[in-house]
Length: 161
Image (tube, rainbow, N blue to C red):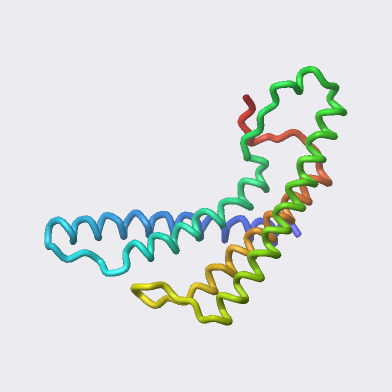
């Protein structure tokens, strides 16, 4: 199980890094081509948008797994450690339900996107694989929240204010 976890984390990090680097490189080349050669990259905005999907949705389960989301604990000093753990577990349960629901709705949207054959306007790239990717990442996020529910340890990676 630990090897699977490490492989998933490595894959998600690779997706995020490669996509972010691709966005940066594409933006630099497009800007240089636009202003120096008067030849922009056709569809660069679409490509950046699709790469953004990869960056954002691969990062969400990574942050959840690391318990790295920002939390605000303005009143937690007034409660016992047990009450704070209970609050963390309730938050993880609620987040599991929300992420699971969003995954379900997004999967349904991916199916309709595939059925209608939706594509990007300039490059005619099919959108369904990207929407399916979003749904899978949201489902993985729900799994990470569920794991956090069963392990209500301290939020080690979070910024508390």
